[in-house]
Image 1 (cartoon, rainbow, N blue to C red):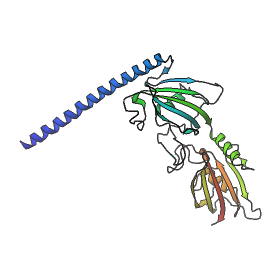
Image 2 (cartoon, one colour; image 1 turned 180 degrees about the horizontal axis):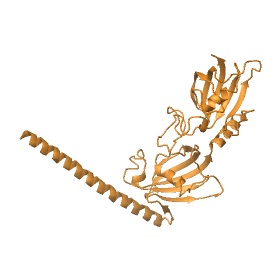
Image 3 (spheres, rainbow, N blue to C red; image 1 turned 180 degrees about the vertical axis):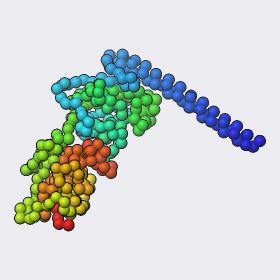
Image 4 (cartoon, one colour; image 1 turned 120 degrees about the horizontal axis):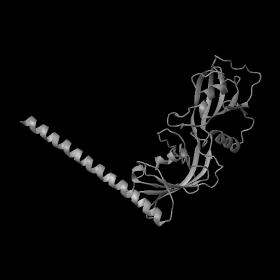
Length: 311
């Protein structure tokens, strides 16, 4: 008897939970339709003409110059934005005088670097990136983009007292710059006045000796070298690591990397013992589309200051 009572109580709880889930689904579907109606009414009242996606995102893109570049995978996009409710109340914005940055990628991991305004995806509106993908490819450098975002497409962290869950939000976004990794490196080199860099035209590796030892022995392929290093992100100059590492130097003509990233190995292979150098390379010679350890974001060009010592 007691067993039947327990089973009956459990079944009742499951049925109640299922009914609550159905009720929630119905409510959310209703709010989605209401959001769509609110957005359409807002557009009509403000004499705005917007395109839309099947997802429910409405958007307006103003192209200032159609000859400017579109963000490709791995490019850095600098932008400013203001987020408003449809009643005009401002709920969020980028920091005045500073552009937020995101890296165009298919990586779903959000990475934030402390002390640097860099959201590596535009977290409030994850679907924003859809407009950069085929078949749309709507976004270019210097564009002004307005998004009308229903509650169902808002980011999980984009809920507050000013922006409760089930309301649509308007985002006005200015695309300030689009920079390839090559352009990011060029900007960094110019800003920091790094002279004398030689560049490998095949893979983008850049190298310059800051302390030459012409009488010292050349580091040979297959030897193990002790390397004192400091690693920095090209994007903001932030140091992400430093220390000493043993490198089993392999032939730069191959695909192996001697226990370190390939750009690091290939730079060390150019040196003599006792020399110091700067090595700069794109993410294809570094940590690629995955990044590393939460300190190196995906698609990051890197700089290393190195000194080669005998093991």
